Length: 326
Image (cartoon, rainbow, N blue to C red):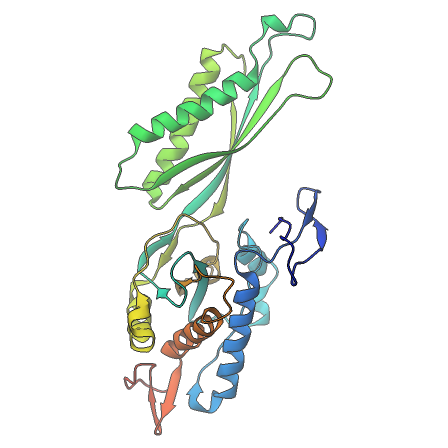
């Protein structure tokens, strides 16, 4: 992530040019180094015990989870021309829970997210007589404030909905008047109907504020899908929950839907396959253990839930239930 490290023995001093052309520091935040370590360790564990299971295991390291787009970029780059399309896709990520805990639930577990850009153009006022125009910055801030009030009364409290202003860009250095302003909104929800309602609300509010300011031009709205809702497959979760309960006992549980977003699900839905995504507790990080051990074990246990184990000559699943051999 584009943040500098606090002074530490392992602090990176590397910088790079980001997608916006800005030079940024590089931090292994959000547990990236932990995720890499856990998946490498789980892969080594599975490889060393390959005589005890059958099937195909593919280990994927997905980039760009924070800004999303990493999974889609892998697909666009021909991922499934290089490896087989799996029958199920499994994912793990850290969450602020007690270290050593593994939580999973069926249904929505991460929100859908859109980036909505609103452009406002003012055709009135000049540098000679700026008092004759309406400042687009005033209109932009009015839109942002009104969206919050509308959100409070327009969405059921049982449904999650969020509209957050991330950026406002306006004006140019050396000019006395502001001719345009652009707002960037982060819009999140779980239900498709709520998502559509949020889009309609944004358009209605932007149009009303521009009309109130007597702008000749309507606002221009551009919606870009940042990530779909991550909606865990119920059958897969049932099997994983049984495996996690058996292995982690009191440290396994049912997670709550979280606000972050992630395009991980594209790795499965691109070919109509099932997927499941769970949380790894790391609230005590950067404690190395039990974080790495539990993260490694969770990945291995999850994989073995769907591969064919061979114990005493009979193929079983991770909980010892007989299954047909692949």
